[in-house]
Length: 423
Image (cartoon, rainbow, N blue to C red):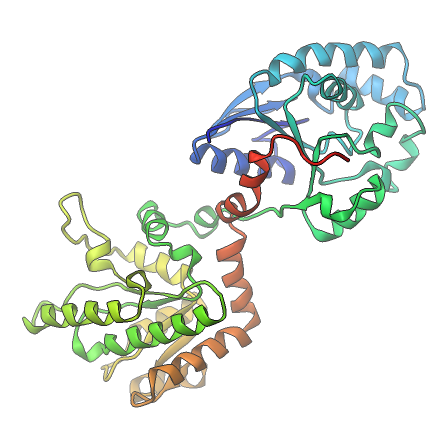
């Protein structure tokens, strides 16, 4: 269901800051999901995927705001505060009009513009504000730097009193415990939604790579294994498929996500039998129980006419960045350049125990006997991936901490709420 979503804060992108970066990421993923996003901010600029409404009175700086803040810090909520609150109320109501939900960053727990907090509270209490999702990063009442500026009574109590019907969100379990204590709420009424990472931007992925990864669910694979080779019999791709099938069976029994194997090359051009070999491999892929488990770029990366597109060096480098390991079960090789590429990418190497690989990788690779059962090799690979805590964390970030994963898992349910349980 398409919704109109407001995001409210003192400032928006391109202002540099963790909250502003979160707002930009939220706007992007929500817009990509078809929602209309409106940033309502005191200052900011163009933001991809969002309508931007700048209302200076909502900011944390400015002569009038700073004058009122100084009076409040001295414990005086007088006519100037009331006048600013009334004006912000008049400006905020139309800014939020037509919105189904408003994500409010810090305004319910921080005192950078208490007139804004008071104005939003007036609209909320009168039933004139959208459903509030209060994204609480910082808590003025729990910060020793801020508590000297806070006083008992109104409006400071708005920062430590739960607003009925608002859904509170924090960024970590530690912050949930802190906010629950501050507001006197059961922790389970506060939702934890962590920040995330923009995988494509951080890894500088090519657009074609990202589109391919999303189309074939590569970012959710656990593990994602890479076999950069042409489809020829000496590459022993059938063993790689069997290992992937064994990993899938193991992961399925544990109730975990499925692995993916990406084979980058087309059938070798010099032997007509390689086309028949590819068909045999496809049959073996079907036997794994999930045809998505093995991705041949020869058939998955094509042009508008369905013809295979050449895999660029940039795409291959991207796949090394994304992969959890190199699976290279060749029967024989003259050297084996992918071993070097995997080493540069810093990913685990799982390869056949043949002389060129022993010479190149030594003990840095997990080597396996070509006669060993695929189930045994798969168990060794799974154990190695589990024991390498840095690799496990890297895999967890790719599968659980991208903005897209966080949006699907944690934010979509918040957008579908009409009103949180009464508090």
